[in-house]
Length: 243
Image (cartoon, rainbow, N blue to C red; front, side, top):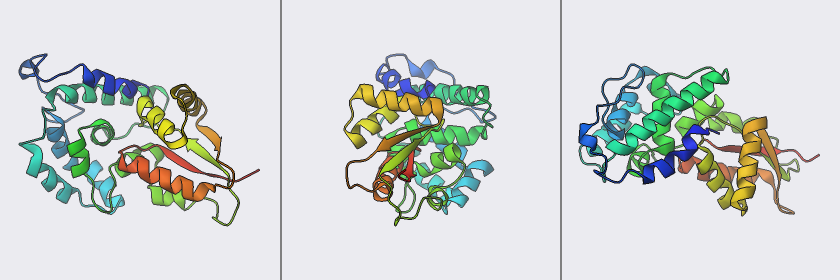
């Protein structure tokens, strides 16, 4: 889980429109990008890059069609995104530095920025980059886990095997605050319990959870993964065979 990005929502709350005179702020450069002024500019740039297009192709989606959808709303977004975009870009860059410090092979900068837009960006943009067969979290999932969710599910135990535990799998793209909220909602935990599980997962790479009596991990994991992907999170759980 990305510790740097976990403060994003709190920082965003401190940036009411026009409070910091964003018209005076210079555009953002991310990697080799042109000047980017807001989240919609960033989406148009990243969707035109070969690296981002290749991942969408892997997901069976057309990046050019998504870019046309963004163009349709980019000049008139529901609310300003200039202030929050600068926070998002800074956190995306901090996440790249964090992964490099951990020895993780860095992704293409455009892919990392696009992933951050889907995980932490404006809801209208996240919905625009979703289709009937593509969830907002599918793109970040490929970066976080090195494969599509379909490919990861192919390695699950057979549904006929008894699995009454599941494993939460660590990734470097899910903000800690969002992971905690997701765990609270999914398992009825307190915030302190969910934080402990999130930190345990971050430290060891996995955290094994027991399910309620009679509940099977396969269906439960499919339900949770679909919920998290719809919300833009690459957070991932998988069945763990019973001992």
